[in-house]
Image (tube, rainbow, N blue to C red; front, side):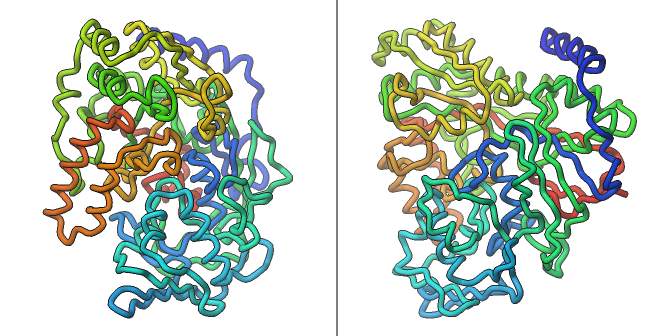
Length: 530
């Protein structure tokens, strides 16, 4: 950590002298402009086509959802005016708010929403569960979306409100009719900001303009719910891969908000005049190692179990968040601590990990024979890069024949969609992180799905996890859900769909004259300059 700090400090000095200066964020159009440094480059724009959180954050500016989670993670009507439930829970009618319009001026109709739901549900785990219980989702009239269900699905609003990827965003029917494997040709939503496509500079800048026609709800904003009031006429996302350069730009007032500052620079930012540091998401984030289950050697569960048994979560969390233990939590299992599903089942593996010689022998006994293993490492994403460095060191010490692919996050997000073998453009493993709020139950936790090639990237096949997940949907009380959570976690330590690396709480840094930032993820409504 001392070496990383020294390098970061030296880079900061160099950046201050050599980096090109941006125009001051307070410049034209004055106090109505917000300049933001996102966690990584926005490589993919379609939130159904991509699982990247940076794409999800972009989508929450441009698109809107029928329901949204509030700060207590309860589903609240958003684009929906409300709903009625009939026929013993098998008929839901969702009424749209009056006057909703897309950015091209066209009205938002129920048929747009029905098509959007169908497209979203082909990729999202919660959506897939909803559609498995759905006989038909269609427009009853221009403002009424009708779900005709095969069996009751009381979590229907929760599915449409979820925060993790993929968001159930509403888009025009002509876009929603496209297969989810194909990116939409243009970004048109009905949210508080519209995407300014002709000002996009891939790898460098994305621009958003306030949607003058947007009519917020009357309730106060609360996470993804309530009145989404846009106080800025224009928001510019400026990609700055170098942490020292981003830090210097924030301190000089050339940018307003740095979403995920490098942890080594946070103490300096706390001391900087005109800058404040806060925790963005009180639910935290969860680092994970995702093996590709389709190809050797990670198609062998014994190899995955052996690798997990030697993981020291503490090492990953120190790399991400430093020595301050208030910023991270271990051991961490497969469900968010404090949730009904959380348990201590199997956590002894992380409390007392095996040493390197023992893990090396376990890998060999499991059948590892020196196969080349690729690890996709996003060097332009500080949090992910730090975890990849720890994992790379761990694998090398185990004697793994490692192909450490140092690349950018945009390339990672595109390559992980490729199911081909690694030598044909595919991959063996990658590291990323997900929101703690996305791990409260098996519907939200897409990483726990075990339905093979229909699952998200990594494509695990885990029939027992799928069976337990189905049982969770049928559970009638929290005691039954808690028992299912314990059994799912026990099974996850056997199947190892992914390896949790710990929970961390990411600081965010912004100019001191910004107020009203909502906690959870980077949201661009409610925040304003004072």
